[in-house]
Image (cartoon, rainbow, N blue to C red; front, side):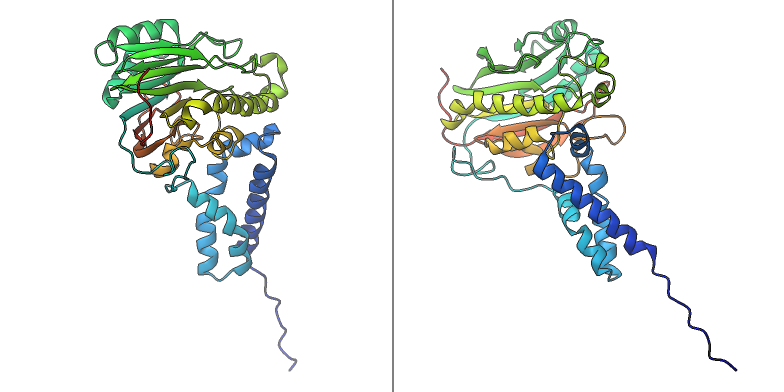
Length: 357
């Protein structure tokens, strides 16, 4: 009788697939960290990052449990990044108040709602959703002239003060719309943010008198993406194709940060809210974070908080950002008839805010 033949062991495809996924996800994260939104593909990767990075968490846990050391090592960084998209992060300290975004505060307390209501949607439904949230200040985007009139009429008792920025065309096929601020507190005045690129939507810095203290707010709508426009330039709006619009958003964020730097550095509460068309993996939020702004959902919100698109959503592109405030709570609310979900944040100004002028 001959010796029994040895059969070669066939490696399981599981660790190989996880290793490959981990390597690709790590490379994509490195590209986003180094190159930002310079190319349309990188912008899209950043925009949809939650959906391709979240799988690293179960992959990492499975690899540890089965002692697939190389697979675990390959998915470690993406798993850590995925974790940061699901749990709150401590707010960084800022030079302005010395306590950071979540430091002790004794100034005005505001319920701030931001919402891209999507031009042309039912104004009555918008009114119902706003009333249900009971906000002190509402920062709206894609407000048409008829919607603005309806909101002023139907919410005049709860939010008697308002300011509507000049209208702009989002693209050649859309209705002209504006950003708007509705407030329970008096509007002291408003001034346009200057230095924006010609293709940008207008942004206005609105000054509110909140119980004797000046608070500055901006409803912003950064340049809309149109990745397919790189292939069909005739379909592009004023912001241009995917790559150009991505660069434009970064510029808009930096100009806006510069515009509010002086009052924020003096300790005044500044609130930015709106549709950034970007996530924390993209350039605009990085620029605003570098300028000292705190993303309220990152410090108090649980889960991905996706705000754009039907169902579970595609990305979290709508946000409330503050300087010189701590966040008490924040949540993503039902989207109603809009393509976007509203974000409600309760913020408290830290000490150092100046008197109303």
